[in-house]
Image 1: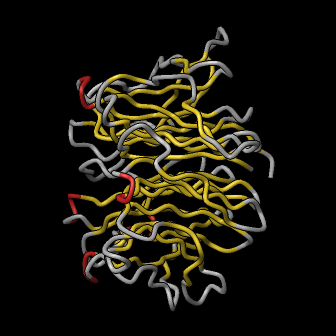
Image 2 (image 1 turned 180 degrees about the vertical axis):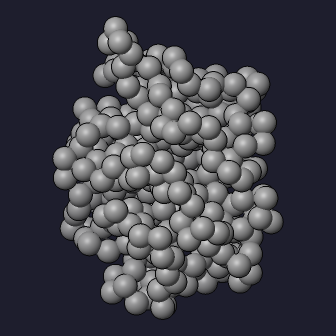
Length: 345
């Protein structure tokens, strides 16, 4: 896979639009600017929950559309324009906790189905056709805060399941494309804000665990076995977690509640420990936290600052600390949510 390092940000504005999309580029003088992918905003409205993925030049964006009673919609950008997959919402009722998994120029996704007590459902889009695979029920109970990625040629999902230990986070694989099976990984009791990051044969799982007062907990699969990567890693409770793994980094971003800051913690693959990465990323209360890495493997983090007028925060790691990249051309105020993704081809 050849990375082309395209960073894309989707922001929902408080004005009641669906979403606006941007990509990094340069102006005539070579300065870094953000460019809108396509003119205008997408049809529909989001209350703030948005989900995005990218690959092979295709960008996928999904959300519960409040103009359709919260039913799920999936949009596809082919490099020229946006189109609504299937021409209508993909669900019969309200949805939440969507996670998109690009599949070549197609895509699969899972979501919590409001018509089935919030249990996870699997769907796939081939061209303009939306399909529901058999055996695609992902969770036993209500699925919350799902992550999905490819691992070993099959979909892997990490999420909170209300039917497991009162709300544990669980790891499941669609190993044979016929049913989801539980894999080792996750919590033994109630946990919140699960996040998964995959890099080749490796992956990292992180969550806020109730057994350690919702401090950060983690597990790491090194390509052959899963090991405990720490419990109670942070000095206090965390929320809104997001993560990214590269050849060199495994980073988890989140709101450190006691310190009231957005922070990033980095795993040391050598000694198995964790360190706060570069100090405070941004002060105040944050949500809609998202992470990715650019073509050089440098982590980026984006979030909404609730204590700062719902402003957009974007930071990139320069090897020593967190920098604010140029935001020329980008909507930065009064947003509902934001997501980062890297395209690859």
